[in-house]
Image (cartoon, rainbow, N blue to C red):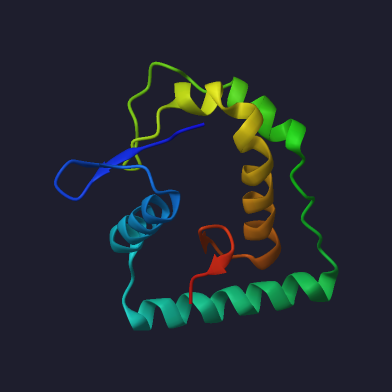
Length: 123
C-alpha cells in the first residue's frame, strides 16, 4: 500500500516517517499549550487518576470489533479535518487501520493522555 502526502511547498512525500513527523508537528502547533496551562492540566490528570484508583474504577478496553463498527458508521460525504484524511480512505483501509487505532485508543485510555504517534507520550 502506498500512501502519500503533499508537504514542503506541494512536494509529494511518500516516506512514512516524514509524513508522521509533519503530521505530529502540525497537531502540536494546532493544539499546543503554554507551560503553565500544561502544568495545571497534568496536576489535574494526576489527581483524577489517583481518585479513580482509590475507588477501583476501571475503564474497559476498546475492542477491534468496536473500531470496525465505528468505521462503518462514518459519513462518507463529510469534508476532511486538518489532517486531510477522508472518511472514505478510512473505510477503504479499515481492515488495515483498525488494529493500530484500537491500540492507540487503548493507550490513551490507560495512560489518560493523548500521544504523539500513539507511542511517544506528550510531556
